[in-house]
Length: 193
Image (tube, rainbow, N blue to C red; front, side):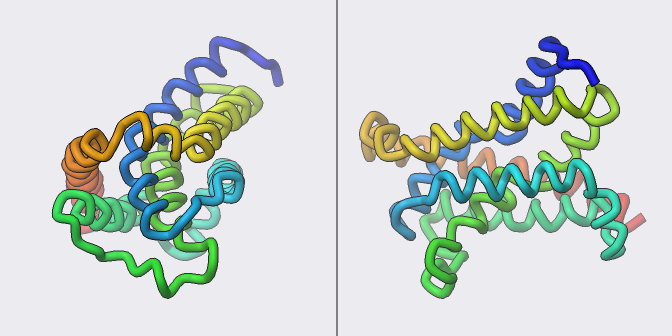
């Protein structure tokens, strides 16, 4: 195994686009308002463990349950769709009050926003192109970015202001709905057919 900076940069950029922590900022701000402070380190570590675990054992785990990546993608699309509806229509689908202390941000923040069908399939695709060491370095670098964003979400919220957050929330709500529809349509055909 050789550390190749070109592979690290390539994998980092692809994962950064898929993990899309910047696009998740309105959701994170909204979650923080509903549930209190988001445990940045916990969310980051759980995300890293799930993504790394899936990289090494994902195919086996899904087949153990008789689930393929397409079925996983459709399930993730439904959750993403629900989050998008919350953002656009200011409704509450997820019940945060019933979850154990500190766990309410796991769904939907860890899954499916950070760790979901898109990130899983991307990791499997990267596995075919790059060496494992370079993908893991790129993944860890992305987790550092995610941690920094989560840790400084209060500052980001103050900079954007309530009007900026409202506009970004509505915009990214529509984007999430579009991503959910695309994920659903792309993968439902192979499940039905």
